[in-house]
Length: 128
Image (cartoon, one colour):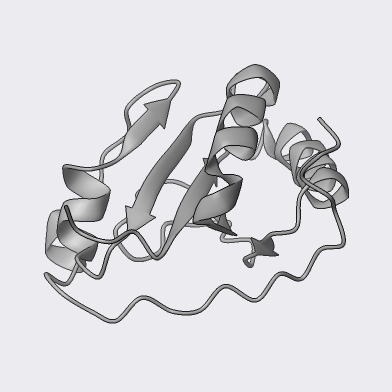
């Protein structure tokens, strides 16, 4: 099995649902020690919809992902591993919470070194 260095959760939103995405982001930051990415109010990279990224250590998967399942408030979330194979991670090894959205495959490299997760929140995973 390929080693999973970390995970990304992409939180998708529209102009109408951005306030919900903002609230979810605040809740994530308060509860989990993660790296919150920038807001992208237009498509970026392989993502065809506005989104922000939440990068998190593999150890958080069993607490963060179930929490997202129950608290995403109707938003679509893509969760994928970071194994060094972005193409496969996004297209074949991912899970979707909510609707499956298009991913632009030609924007994804076949291989790259996973980047380190540097949490920029002070949350604690044990607070569910």
